[in-house]
Image (cartoon, rainbow, N blue to C red; front, side, top):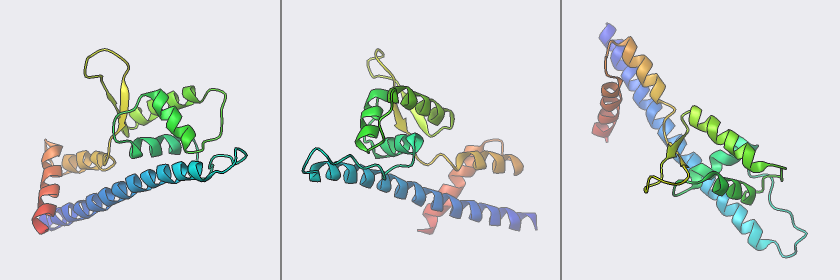
Length: 165
């Protein structure tokens, strides 16, 4: 009977994993579309009186997430600031300091990761860590099922999803 629940749990996690992956892909597509919309609004502006768009993001954290999701490569904080401004984020006295604070929080939340320069010297860049929201649940479920290596549970769920295709 416990095995039935275990199989149900694995199936539920498999389904949840797929949904989270699809949501992540949609959020990346939305971020890229916001970036495109901001760029097009800038091109459409005929006179200098038009202000940049301000309705594409809901705050500095959302703006930074949008920038990281839409980025094709790791970004330096100054690059993040420039792209946040391009999204139409309202001017601030020290936007770069706010960007640094948000990046620190996103790193702590495991949404963004540091990328060391290839040469070993120079500033640290940051990039979006896609599809990490589900990982803590794997650890808790694996622990509950007595699996010493949570990555085995994650691999089993991912593998059985591929087998169904």
